[in-house]
Image 1 (spheres, rainbow, N blue to C red):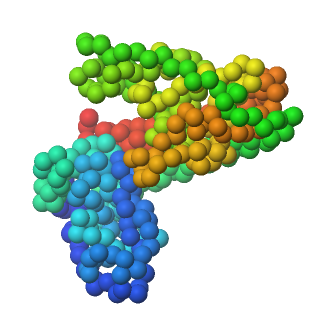
Image 2: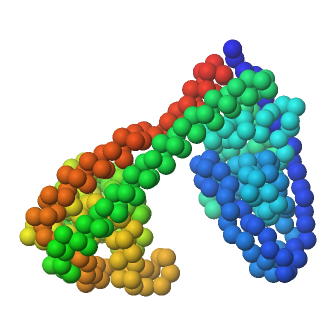
Image 3: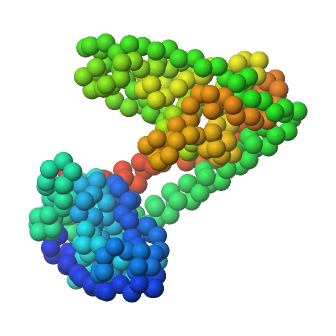
Length: 379
């Protein structure tokens, strides 16, 4: 059965509860995560700490959208714990029309890629001044089945979301157990305080950037998230004169974000790809450090905490973790033969964590959303 497409102005009604801020009263402030991840607490401040004298108060169940970042998926339904929070005029507020739509249905719709796309279509302006045009946004259409059908869709997606949440919690628990296991091993089994200068050697394969050549890039996620592949870059796309070509087993560090755990061991899939000169690469001394052992260790918050004090500079754009700072760090390391014996154990636990939530877990709900709504609009 194909669902009718209905303009958002039939589903969402603009709302305003403008209040004067009291200097010595505390207020919750809201921020909107990007890409349909919803609303969250930005912080709690007093009225005196807010530049404006007036703000708009929101209520649980209302839909709030960022004019500035709507095209990047910054919107969501106000959760109960943010009831009464305040937002600026850059965040239009809407009541969900109960005779037409369930609030949870609107919440699920707003998590789809095509809803983000319609917000992009409703935004206009120059590069740094793109704003959502509210009237244009409300003219956009969404699939809207009957209220009973909306209820069935919500129940189905809520059940799937709860199952995914349980799997993610299990994966997190196993991951935390693995981190504890790695840290304990690093402080026992005959571990000796070792300066990283004895375990790592700066090892860079610098490749000059040539015209008409594409250099596939890698990035590093923070907090031990590892390497990921990015698009290719040509000489026309960069001001760098060279890139660092990666090799399997190298320890890769982001000078800019290393302090927050943007470090990783290069695996076979990333070998041969390129990183900017802001990424420094090191070879593990085989007499002191097994790269596979170090791959597990450098994912832990324990190791990330060792990196933060070795960072120099002021402000997020100037902080740097330079090679000499990294190599001066001292950590306990068990003998390399012990590391060799521990790697298979760590690998098995890591595999169990991966199996507890497949690599496609993060894409499961978006895929279900596509299936549900594509079926309803006859796609």
